[in-house]
Picture 1: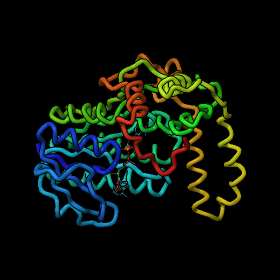
Picture 2: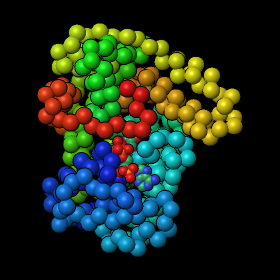
Picture 3: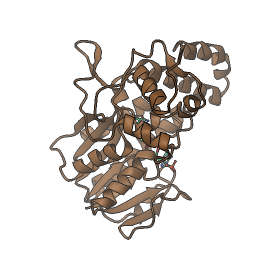
Length: 317
Ligand SMILES: NC(=O)c1ccc[n+]([C@@H]2O[C@H](COP(=O)([O-])OP(=O)(O)OC[C@H]3O[C@@H](n4cnc5c(N)ncnc54)[C@H](OP(=O)(O)O)[C@@H]3O)[C@@H](O)[C@H]2O)c1
């Protein structure tokens, strides 16, 4: 298949690009002006520089494709950027898909949109709703936590410092998934478009791990004693309250308020399927895929076999 890949320079986008090439697909990778792909030049990959958010004619450079995969994501999570990327840029991709020969649109989304409290989650849901109404068959992949989101404390544990937890570290959990497994899952869906829009939550191989479990695993792997420091998640509310007067006059402070909301969300919510009847997260109901375990990933980081992934702009730890 010839596949249009948006977000090919991102953490998951890079893995999807590798997987598409490995499976013999022809890839048209959209990148922002000046951005390079991390994989070596391949005959099967055409890199096209476009500004999806600013250039109305971006699609004129794009050849007809059979499928679209979007791994686009706001790098900051700030409300304006989230609207432009999670909703507007994806909407433009969908418009292109609807005009052309596209048989399947695969969207990388996030399991956290089940609890839409944040600007980026609402923008994702708005776009998911457009996909559901579209004539183009679509698969929405709502992933749980990526391995990359669970490496923030590697350096502090290596330095002998305690592992930081919110509350007891037992109130949230996730089924972490590697970039490679998620890419395999996404590409495996490409050839079979659903009759109506499919929404697929997906995690890595279980069991679900709490922050306590992750901390213990990391400390053991790095040969450090498992010591913890507990922080109250309410600290994000207190900081928000303190800076709220400045947010009345400053856009950057309003963005900061949103980053604090994001931090509180991840400190208090699980990345698992939500059971609305029982009003709890359900690890059993959260589908699993792949072979890569967090244990093996931490072991690779400890030995230097795996490089520490670059983290997002507003990573907390
Ligand atoms: N972190 C987690 O644990 C987790 C869990 C589940 C789901 N998710 C979801 O997974 C998705 C992708 O995550 P990721 O970590 O792969 O993201 P990422 O590494 O931040 O990559 C984002 C991609 O979007 C592109 N992009 C951003 N702003 C753009 C713009 N204005 N115009 C064009 N392209 C733009 C980036 O291009 P540049 O390289 O040019 O910036 C990059 O290719 C997100 O939707 C996220 O919510 C994350």
